Length: 342
Image (cartoon, rainbow, N blue to C red; front, side, top):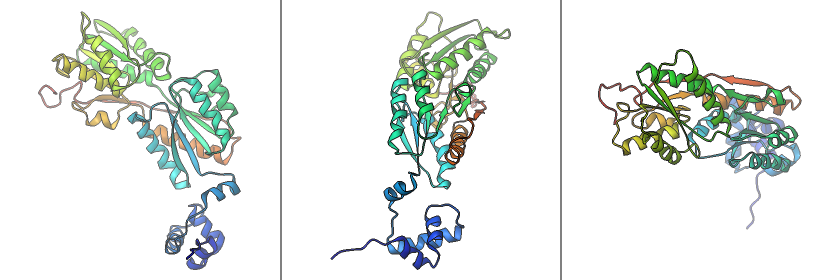
C-alpha cells in the first residue's frame, strides 16, 4: 500500500483559500493570524509538510541565520541567542548555532564556508580578529553582522558595548565599599574582551579619584570557571592578598569565589567579587554575583534587526549600534542579610 504526500494545492482547497494565501500563511509572511490558524489546521489534518529543500532551491533562500560563537557553553551566548530568536522567529527564520573555534583563522574559515549557501546570513561573535577575518567578512556572499568590537572603519555592521566602562564601574563600586587592595582577574589579552577589559581596569586605577592602596592583575588561560579557579588561586596566594577581585566575566568570578572558599575565606567579608555579563548563572549562584550587565539580550535583538535589514537590502550601508552597561549589586560584594554570605 502506498501513501501520497499531501500537496500545497490540497491544503489550499481544504482551507478554502487561494494558493498564494496558503503559501504566505504557512511561511508566516503577509497573512492574518486567523488565516494562519485556518491554513495550518488544514495542513495538520492532511499531514502536509513543506518541501523545505525544494523551496530553498526555488527561492534561493534557506530561512536560516547562523549564530557563531567561540564557546557554545558560555551562558552569555545563550542570552544573546534568545534576543536573536525573539526578533528573527516572527519573520520565519530559524537560528542555527555554530562554533567558530577560538582563533581568528578558524572564524575566517567558517565565514568562507558561507559560500556553500546553507544560511541566509550570519551573526558572529569573534573572540579574536585579524585582517584575514575582516577580509572574509567583506567577501561573504551573505550578510554578516558582528557582535563585539565596533567596525565602522571596515564597513561592517556591528553591535558593541563599552565593557571597559563596565569594568571601571565595578572597580569604583568595590573601592566605595572600603576595599583597599583590588585584584583584576582577566582572560587572554589577545582577545577582544580581554584587551578592552584590561583597558577599563587600567583607566580606572589611574584615575585621580582612585583611592585604593594597591592593585594586582592575573590573566587566566581563558574565560571559564576552571581557568578562573586556577588564576584566582594565584591572586589569593600573593603576599598582599586582595580584599576585592574584579573579574572579566561571570564564569571567572565564580572561579574566584570557589578559590576563596578553598582558602577558608568568606565572600564578601574577606574578599568581595564582581563579575561581568550578568548571566542567569551568576544570578542564581551563591552568593549571587554583583555583575555588570552588557545588555546581552538587547545586543542579540539589535544584531537580529540589523540582519533583517541586510537580508532585505544587501547594499544597505553598514550600521553601528552601541548598547549600554549597568552594574547590578548583589551579595558577592554587599551582604544584604547582615551575615556572611557563604
